[in-house]
Image (cartoon, rainbow, N blue to C red):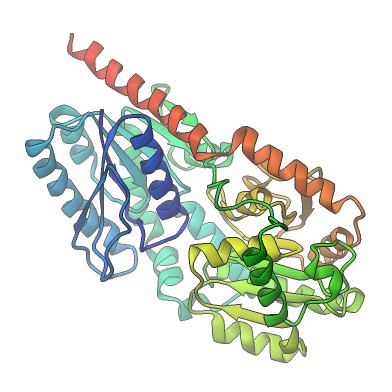
Length: 426
């Protein structure tokens, strides 16, 4: 079948949705399908992926408003594409594309069934920003995106509602997201929605290969770079006195980085050799650096604005523990990438994170509570079973959370949507 994927994120514009779409497209091709990605234009060219065509469309570079301008241009691109190469299924990734109900209906009637992916909602994002602001993570007015979500999230939520009302089938990326959409939008009994949790690239995010000399040298370089390279650390031993903590994600309020920094003095009290490495881009870098200085922990904090995919994967392997203190997620891929890398993860005791992580493979702490976060991290760093947990985490990913699983699950959903349309037309 010819699958047209409409996604506001696609490499080189990485992010959770961009990463998912990139890997899923490649697996659709392996299953024998043709794939066209319709995404936002970017100054850099998208990476080459055999069997995948990329159509870039213009968009207004304004917070929230870009979803509507991109949606209009993607709509036009679908028409043009269909006239040249008939489309069998449209896969729209919400909320980064905004279409009206009549636009969804037109696509369904004139081109192909629409399967909409629900990656979390604007109203959920708004609640997450409010929680983060209440916890003094960041002043929302300093970040145009956060401010736009707070002030216009309700307005743009009507496009999400259009998607769940008019798509042939919806797919939520967690049980939490499904409950959220039912709570916010109250769809009728005809609402057809499945839950498929996204996987991760288990071949890129994998445990260390201690027999690979080049990889071992890179591990040593990273540990030396962050001043956490005692002999146990260099041999991946949990007995290290210089543990490396890793936090990955955009530097925005809802990711919970201020809570993590506030936990660090208590972590350093029990683990004075610990170092925290934060990887992400965003407006909060200077605020985080100022907070670290205020807390007297600057020497233990490192912030990396950008890493290549390969460098990031090695950071996951080289870390002793990944910490993910987010206030809101549709699903959250970072914990899965950590587990796939053979590294335990500490995260919040809230859905959807608890759908993937429990105490058999990681640790849980109260959202927004720096004392509980510190307690959790310190316990995990002293856990003699930490390496066994890491192995169990990798097994969990391989058994449930891979793009191979996602591709076959989505293929079934697409075929069901096509069959439903055929039955209606008969």
